[in-house]
Length: 308
Picture 1: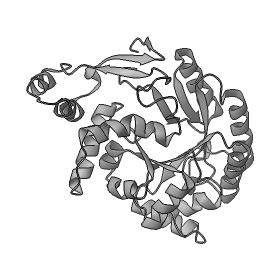
Picture 2 (picture 1 turned 90 degrees about the horizontal axis):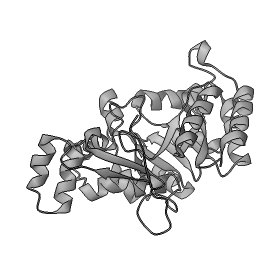
Picture 3 (picture 1 turned 90 degrees about the vertical axis):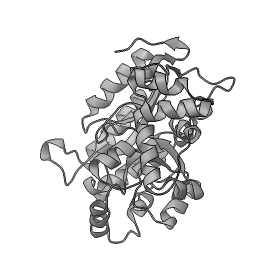
Picture 4 (picture 1 turned 120 degrees about the vertical axis):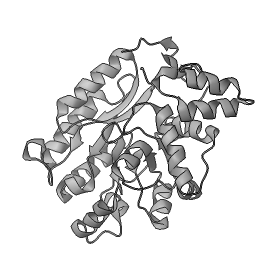
């Protein structure tokens, strides 16, 4: 709540009780949350390994227990294709067919070494994205983190299938993974939202994340206007999750999840915004200089929340 996030799509761990714990915490706040137990049965430490059968059984039980309960949703969550056997990916695809209303959440094309390893591990697949496609994991409500090293065919296929990309600039810069090509994704009509990536990222604040997104685009010779950054963090993210009918803006009938931002949250932003001549200029200052100090209040379904 300190950072103003009102809806989140998050990874659990490989342990089923990690999903139970985060769902219980979100339910206590009536927060909209999508999460899932991670699936991982190879190329990982033995103590963090499940298998195809237990992954299917545990995920199915969690879906039945939590999906659609209040504002909670379940995401089938293979960590990424490198850490799942073909049998486990097939089990994940079976779950996706049996529960078409749940989400799929995983990583895609985060760095070039990973892409090269995918080509060796799955030689019959055209691309990294095609691995997921072949196992039935590319569809509406499939959200792929990073998506840095895709080609035009991948983008076209992702768009046609209804998949979405999570743009995680703080993680991509911190790990040196690459630069997200937002103009190419927009040209292909791929749904995109802004993500903090709490594992590899450097901040839970979407304001700070938007600042890094601006730099990623600028390095590629592109602009990121304040209004576009705001869209990626709000309605764009809601569209990526197929939740834009209930959240993302202030249209009548939508749920009242929103934050109140304070331009004077720091002396620097107070000074900078005081000279702004337009709301766009003031908001650009908040996006480039702001952080959790500028979140004056967070509202869930119209009710103010206490900071943790």
